Image 1 (spheres, helix red, strand yellow):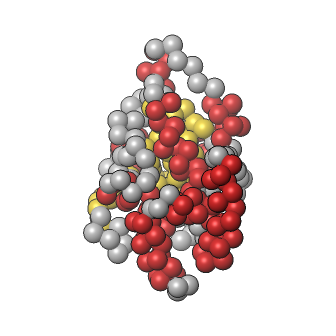
Image 2 (cartoon, one colour):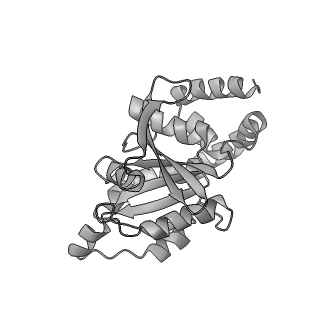
Length: 230
């Protein structure tokens, strides 16, 4: 829609994700039902240059499997609604614990920004994070911010702008599994791709189906019906 873009915010609970959402959107917020769903999500807008970013605050989760309604809601929005960018918010003081969710998002979406929040607290604890090294390793932009102090916001917004205009191309790292799992993915992925095309990550869908994710299969069937390909 013109110069309007959807940015989904994902993250573990207590990473400051909603604080970041509130700081970026200010009073330009509302809650409403996600189209066709009974799930209520908070959304807000940020004006930047000639663009409007619509931020969607997804439920805080530790993973994006089908273990809870919140996990399904966050996962399904990223996969099936396909926001222009998924912004994954991590706690700079607990990166190891937070990276599980980030790696899951990198498997299911292409345009991803890793936003390392609470950087001020990390520095107070003597934690130093090399965001340039992480960017090279992960294949997507990694930005350090402090939501409560609003530091790092100009770079974050500029990065979002450059992604949606194609000036930055994201190439998320591919996670390699055991030889046995990789062989199964290799067999299944062409069949998945023949059904869903390029709209979703066929590798990720194949991986979830191998894991027996029946809830995803149900959502996938609904998606294909809506898209008129089933």
